[in-house]
Image (tube, rainbow, N blue to C red):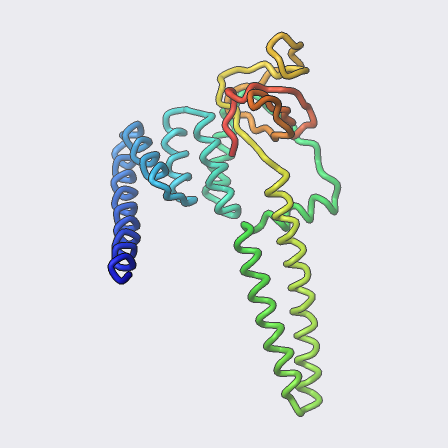
Length: 249
């Protein structure tokens, strides 16, 4: 049993150390301007099971340097999922999006819904869960202090701060559930085909309703026979697209 535990620990730390060395090597290739080799090195790290916002970001930068719109936007979006407030990712994604052919004007959301969605997207799901745990522990601390205090003033202060903390916990918990709902219902993808006709129905002979180009971001609504997906744009347009034309985020 001890041997198995030791082997696991050695493989765990060796894998982490090896991944860090591979990442540094890939960064060196990027700094030298060998973007094709850097891409291969970064993708080898991804294939080994290691993922991080920095890894996706650097890989996106490589593709951006090669003017590969679809791949660069795809990996910037992947990085943004893990680090939604990172300004470098947001700025570079904005630059990459300017290279796309399609200029899609999103329909503005209703005021309150827009606020709730924006608040939920401030942090990743694990971060929201951590905030909830921290707020609950703080509330328990205030509640315990209130229960043990003999001074009326201290009881009042602990009650007020405990109530505010509990309110914060309820808000954070609500946003956590909303974030989980968004993660489960909002599935997005990036178009990888240079040009693709979006169909009225899920078959090649159907009428084309509009055309998209590489780098366009689409929302996946439903699938048909695992070969077609109904998609929606941020401007409200919908249609059917072959699954071979995009890569899901």
